[in-house]
Length: 273
Image 1 (cartoon, rainbow, N blue to C red):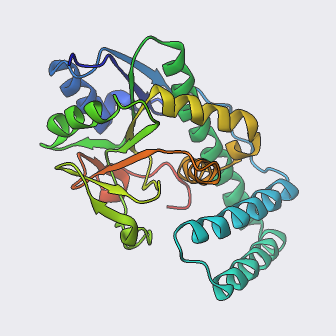
Image 2 (image 1 turned 180 degrees about the vertical axis):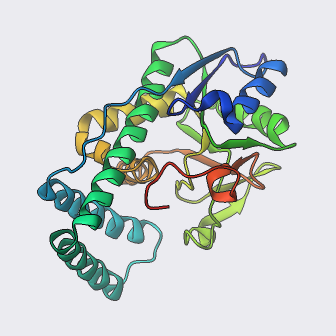
């Protein structure tokens, strides 16, 4: 079977040439693993403050999503639900009492939404292209010796007819994310999950069917663009499960790329990290 045509989208904020992902792109091109690269960095200027009402609406939406996600992971409990409600009350009080907290939250929400918009732009560019596979890397994606063989495996997996998502960089331990009980053995170098889950969105691959379903979800649920990119994926996975849709979800294990900002290679773009 011939290698599928592959588009790589690099998500950055003007720092790509000095970033670890620049080396990743070079390695993949040299190995003939990608056919085209697009670079997505444009974002609107950030405002010093955004309305408190907007932040509270986001927090309510996020809280509802977190409750549904706990049920998705079989981790739901009345105690955790009450704790979530209390956290929302505390969040509102901190917004009203601390100008510094309001300012930092305003910045964090705008940055998260800008990054989410860049990822969504990469999915649309992919569907507008002729390529069969999309690889998305954020600028802090850092190479490993596993990159080329893992990517070959990931590309073969995406040739399935059903929606397929492959997390290449990991980032957080599965037990920390409380998804370890959903893991099951899969093809060498990867684990699959009984239910679709994400880790971080530092680097991942998808096929056209997945991108099509994902953008349809975003179009039907525009409120999802308020979320950080990881939680947008979670919201999409919840939608797939509600529709009883089949989806392939693979995670490189060990990671084929290192999440640079979590590993201390680079500094996180997130103002609260």
